[in-house]
Amino acid sequence: MNFLQDWASAAHTSVGFFWMALWAFALGYLVSSLIQVMVSRGRMKRLMGDDSPKSMALGTFFGFISSSCSFAALSTTRALFNKGASFPASMAFLLASTNLVIELGFVIAIFLSWQFVAGEYIGGLLLIVFAWLYIKLTSPTGLIKSARKQEDGEDEDNSSKAWRALLSRETWQQVAKKYQMEWQMVWQDVLLGFTAAGIISAFVPSEFFHWLFQGSGAEVSDASFWQVLQQTIVGPLAAFFTFIGSMGNIPLAAVLYGEGVAFAGVMAFIFSDLIVLPVLRINAKYYGWKMALYIALMLFVCLVLTALTLHYGLFAFDALPDHSQQQHITERAFFSVDYGFILNIIFVAVSVSLVYLTQRQTHQHSHHGHHHDHHHHAKSWRDHLMNGLCALAGVWLVIGLILNGVL
Image 1: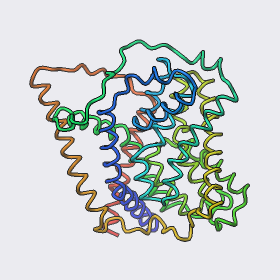
Image 2: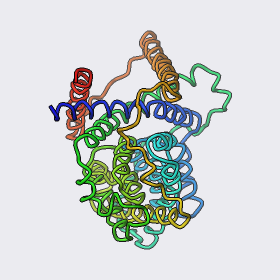
Image 3: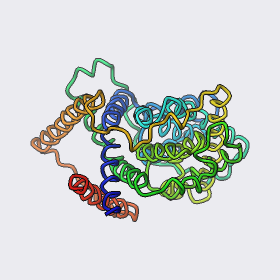
């Protein structure tokens, strides 16, 4: 009976996590879709051709306005790099588009505290600076030359829309299409991430976290530098074997923090979305294994340095978040009628409207005889694995919710 009760608790927690974050996802993706439609990427590569501060700043800015999930960001980064953007500027774009993300800040604010939101954005900039210095110091000229492959194909439209275009139906149809694509890119990571967070919170005892993250659970001032360093290294290593992107990792990060993991360890875990196993394999496919391993090592070193810098920067100003003040994530009232409930209702209505626009556009195209050829590419092992895991997660949640209503 205890197992069934834990199962019911895990499913209730997973769905509760998602309900808490739903409006933040929707708002973030709406803003991101608007930016992508209104601002063109067509001239980026010509402005990012060297490793000067200007190119790095532009790479960071373009990454920010192109915020997306890890796998979409990898594809865009590869295209920019192969079309002439410098390697450091391409890395700045990659790190900005996965860390300086509007929707990520919203979700972090819901599950964690303001220090983690500040850490995400300040840390994203620090990551870019450290990566730039790392590349300067190691000077991987040979790797860069062998990794670069010229791509054929036309650039994207170089024009940006005037903001008055927001008054047109066509613009909102494009926004709706982008919005739907954003959800299509992340729904698997979100489903698995939130399901895993619920399972871990219900089934994994606190003693395991205290063993894995040495010194966790201690007062902020009691943890030694070596304990904080160990937690900061273990965070990315734990994330490496997951298949979950940054959006799905946030509830897991909240569970870790609730178990007393240090600020640096939690931030390192959040920053680790670009060193997980699937990302390593994709980079190997794009650039070869030598460059993929170089990028992984660079990101690992830089995120550890960034997390430690953030941790001790806050510590110096006595601003580290206090674990004792953190309400355990599973103790929150997930479904109470509050501002989050009202925002969820509003953004569910917005999402339904945007889906209606995309469906209407598709119907109009088919009505006018515009047929698109659909190329069915062979699915990779990751596609099959993710589909199978998502099916299992769905069954797990449905049965768990039924148990939650019965027990």
